[in-house]
Structures are given as structure tokens and as C-alpha cells.
Length: 304
Image 1: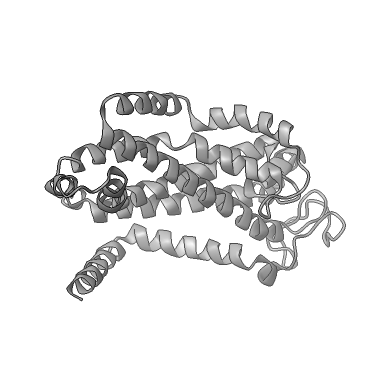
Image 2 (image 1 turned 135 degrees about the horizontal axis):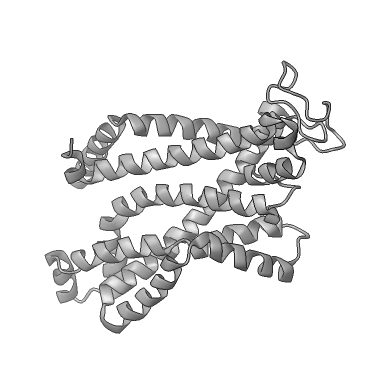
């Protein structure tokens, strides 16, 4: 009972400190807004419009009927933006989960066992750390897509989007692995780890039950930053034509706008709307990540 009360008090104290941060509040409100858009796009703007169901003129400027104007085939840009939010956020969040899982596993294993395990895993991490994840994703994605094809669906996603999710997740974990390893090197010398070893606790249980809970704050704080990076990577890949027009993300909309000559024809709304969404959501995650870091790290809170 005391343990539950202490955890409840600790959670209450954390939330109070976290919500004092103006950046955290702004980031959470922004993210909540876009999550609502992604959760119920059909209720807000109707079904995703296609060239056959388009109701507007070509590249029509914003008006009462079309608040964000139309695209080059007459589709409502607001409709595309709202439906694209689901694809963009889902790709970013799922790929981040993959990235955090891989990075945490490698960093925790390297830091706990040390010696040759640490050496080899860190050499692998250095490879992914030195080469930008976007470059790796740009090289790998077309090759995998060519082998898989673009037909059918996988877990509700077309193959092109599933490939982007997996590639981003498997190429952006190095930063997390380095941070987790650094913290693990410090934690493994603590007395509670030595006591667990003395009573015969297995290495796996020590890593999962004793070390991992102490790493959650750092993983959470940096996970928000990883999401922002995943959004940028997905946008860039889709902009280069690796997205799927049948399930358009914000990056795909930017690609379609560029191909339609939106910039040269003055259709600023077609380029500006998805670009602004990418920027706003990325900044929201960065603000949340910084606020988490400030909350979990007393030394940062002490800096004026």
C-alpha cells in the first residue's frame, strides 16, 4: 500500500512540475489537436476525396467552401490535410516505437555486459550514427519496395508505407542506443544491481526489472525528439516520391504539389498547408521532449 501511495505521489509531483513548463503545455495542446484530426478524419471532413469525387476547381484559392483551397484535380486541401495527419502521425509514432525498442535493447545490452559485447555493438551503433538515417532510408526504401511491390495491404498499410515505417525505425536508433548505454554504465555499478546479482537474479531480469525502469525518463525525453526526426524523414522520403498517393501523408501532398507546379503557379496554400503541419507537429514534439528533459533532470531546472 505504501508503495502505491509513493508512486502516486511521485507521479503527481512529476505532472505538476512538467505542466509548469509553458513549452510542455503548448506542445501537448498542439499534439492533442492533431491527434483528434488523425483519430476521426471522416467525421470532421468526410471521406478522403479522390479525383473522381473532387468538388472544386483546379488550384482554387481558399474560400468559404474550401478553407484551404483545392489541389490540381479539384480536391479540397483541408480534406487531404486532415486525412494525411493520420498517415503521417502513425508512420512517425510506429517507426519511433521500433527505433526506441532497437536502441534501448542494444544500448542496455552493451552497457550492462561491457567488454567485447560493448565493443561490437558500439561499432555497429557508430555506423548508423555516422551515416544520417535519411540517407540510409533513401537507399534502402526503393530496393525493398522493388522486391515487395506496392499491391495489397499489410496491417492496414500499403507496402510502400509499411516499408517506410520499418526503414525509419531500423535506421534511427543509434542516438537512443548511445544515451541508454551511457546511463546503463553508471547504473550497473549501483548497489541494487550488486545485491540482485548476489541473490542469483538472472542478467535478463536485472536488465528488465532493475535497470530499464531507471532508464525510462531518458528514453521518454529522447523519444519525443526521435518522433520529430521521424516526421521529417517520412516527409522527405514521401516528397521524393516514395510515399503512396492512395494513402497520402503530408509529405506525399508536398510531392504532389511540387509536381503540379504549385510554387510557380502561385498556389501557396497547396504547398504551405502540409509544410506548416509538418513544422508545427515537429516543434510540438521537440517542446515536449525538452520539457521532459527539464523535469527529469534537476540540474537543467537549476540553469536560469
